[in-house]
Amino acid sequence: MASSIEQANLSFLPDDYLANKARRRTNTICAALLGVSLLGLGAAWFVADHTLSNTKVEHAAISAQFELESLRLKQVEQLQKQQQYLSRQAQLTDALIERVPRSVVLAELTDALPQGVSLTDFNLDSQLRMIQAPSVPANAVAQRQAANKATATPELQPRFYNVSLKIQGIAQNDVQVASFIGNLNQSPLLEEVNLSFSETKVIQGQPLRKFNIEAKLRRDADVSARKLAKRSKQTATLSSTGE
Image 1 (spheres, rainbow, N blue to C red):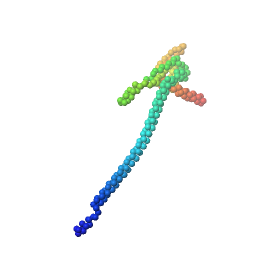
Image 2 (spheres, one colour):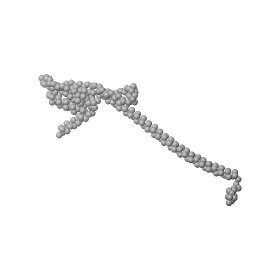
Image 3 (cartoon, one colour):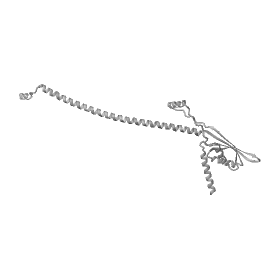
Image 4 (cartoon, rainbow, N blue to C red):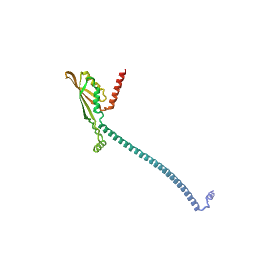
């Protein structure tokens, strides 16, 4: 039986042939594995390159959008600066223009006079309105910005004035003086109307009431408001007359 097993293991092929066959099999397997590895590397490189290309495209789009938004912000800042400049020029122009001429104030006083009351003196006094100083910045950045603004070329500031009135007149009695003060309080141009002095004075043998009234011109006084109030008063008068 042992001799039969030895006869079965006998091979008539040369030893070199078997070694070459095993070597070729090994080379084939290694080549297949190498090809699979290279194919995997190629696929990975393709995916990475495709992803990088998409990333570059997205980055370019975002950069273009960022530049567009930056340009829009610059345009908005320029418009804001122009608006501030125009607003400043409008304030300077408005400060130079007398909103309520003296003739209009005198006409308002004349229209408010009741029957039996006459003016003897009228004076207007203008004082520069003090503008509150800006508060001191809290942090260092704000202080630095404030210092830079202080060293820069100073801008022209509009000048506003507080206008006060001193009115002197005579009336026949205190009722007429009170009526005159009531009419002045209803004026759209005046405020803080107060009687500062009143006494009896004999003029040409007739006792009359001499009075002094002080008032202030409204800061927002406008001639158009007076015209509107006068028009409404005329309309009410016509309506009452028609009835």
